[in-house]
Length: 262
Image 1 (cartoon, rainbow, N blue to C red):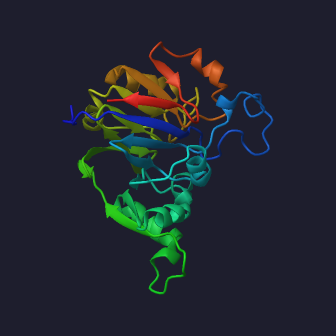
Image 2 (cartoon, rainbow, N blue to C red; image 1 turned 90 degrees about the vertical axis):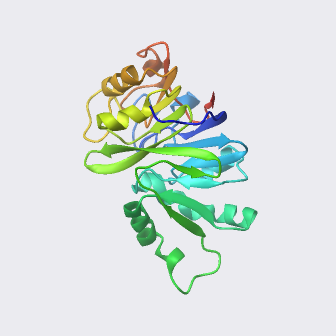
Image 3 (cartoon, one colour; image 1 turned 135 degrees about the vertical axis):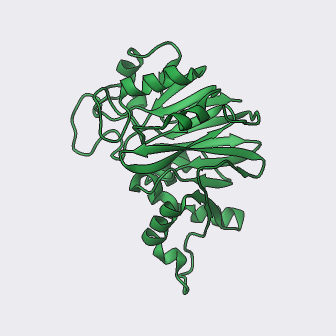
């Protein structure tokens, strides 16, 4: 088990959907046509608030909408799991936080991910910078624990098919998305987790994401007090239908859900 200082805080699911979100453009399936707000899923992201500091895990294309919905006015840092579009394309919208806080936004990512950010947002890093660009301060992380102020963060190496990605743990909260494989030594970092958030794309197996059965097997090994499924596709079914399939301590997450942890 990883030595994690007890940290009480709150997490808000900013988004719980796949790279296409739910509803999917042009789809008329029952889930995409559902009127239940819990079936409306923006791209997956999590807001973690500890000691008055707001950390966001991933900033996808819905970042602006998510920040407005939750009325977020301060942002200490953004942690990036990997470089796919649905996890980084919202970084341009940190400009508002730059203005509000009068400083660049701290972005924590491994070097390969930083290279993608520098390529996609090349206008941010040019010598002759256009006025009003988003200001980013990139921090390189590896597969070793680090701190943001007094908040301990433990990266957890996962694999998104063959792409190395990071999950993150702070205290009793662990967040694993876009993953279909973890080595046993990485799973051990999750032992003692009280709240486990894990991706479960659908019932059927998938090339690069856990399906329901695989996610439940990880949950069985870790034995958290509670687990929440995220990165849910329209193929999985409705919120109500998914909930009916789960053990008593496992829940389908939904956008805007707030949970306490310590």
